[in-house]
Amino acid sequence: MEKSVVEIIDTTIKIGLGSFIGLLGTYLMAKLNHTHEYKKDKSKRFLDSLEVMTLDIEDYTHILSKYLIYLSSSVDNRALLESDKFKEIENECFNKSKNLIIVESKLKLMNLAPQAKLVFEFSKVLDEILSIHLNSDNITKKNIENKQKIFWDKRVELFDSLIAIYS
Image 1 (tube, rainbow, N blue to C red):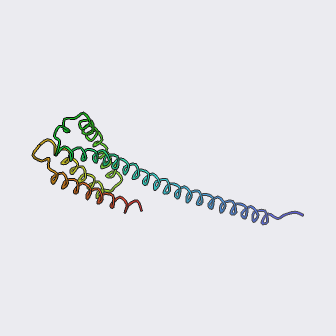
Image 2: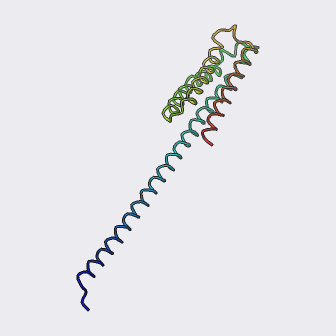
Image 3: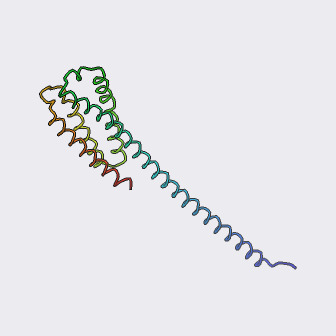
């Protein structure tokens, strides 16, 4: 059985066309998988970054809460402001405050300017709280409670904004 030239060319074209279709399908599937994996990885990194930033904010919130407890107690006992424990907590507040600047920068890099602005406003409230004890006339229960309320309100506003993004 001899095959004619036309049959050989026909078979060659069919094999070549089938190979080309297979190659094209493989390429498209690989590209789709890569794109999907890239988006999935990017989303995971985004959420992980938000979680780390949230932990940084909460860490600072905890330290500032201790500071506020000492500050509130100092209304009745001014000697607490001179105690080593108060100075230790105060130093810890100042040292950890850089984390808020880092969080603000990360949010800006992630193109989350409204949330970065909320962190900035939150840090300004914290600065005001940290400066209360510098003027002993400011150390009143009412002033501390007012600052504490502003602090918690800003914290809630910030976290509500972050939760909206995280969801």
